[in-house]
Image 1 (cartoon, helix red, strand yellow):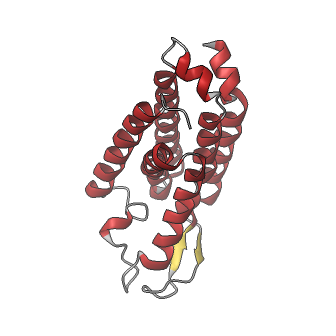
Image 2 (cartoon, one colour):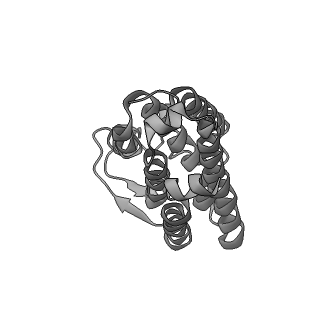
Length: 194
């Protein structure tokens, strides 16, 4: 187990990712920026949508730092360790964002944990199909949401998930489903050599 943690770089990469996540969640709160949109006009977009990116990039970096042939031929179930790492990252993001939200009374902070679960799940699913380039999937998703995800009146479309309010049931269900499907795809695909 100790060698696996060192090989993945979880003790350094994920610590930096979590610190960046916490710094952004506590610092941004209700901040927004006016970004161009092809459909919804130029209403301000919450910057909290982009907070999960450093943590997800750190997770993908850890998962990609592997020796595929050695892990596939080994007897230890490394894919279960990797799945536990992914679930731990998502759980800590959820808990820390809820804690920050309770402490700062920011509803956007609580949504950052849900968005991390959704974007991480989508990224893990894409990683099982495309490998390392999947790290660009959450960035692409956010760009598509900003450009096409809002109706007039700045209402988010249902498929966007990440700009929905923290009380949105369908966003919570979509995030949980993406998380479960992404981790399952990670377990299934990790025994394959690239």
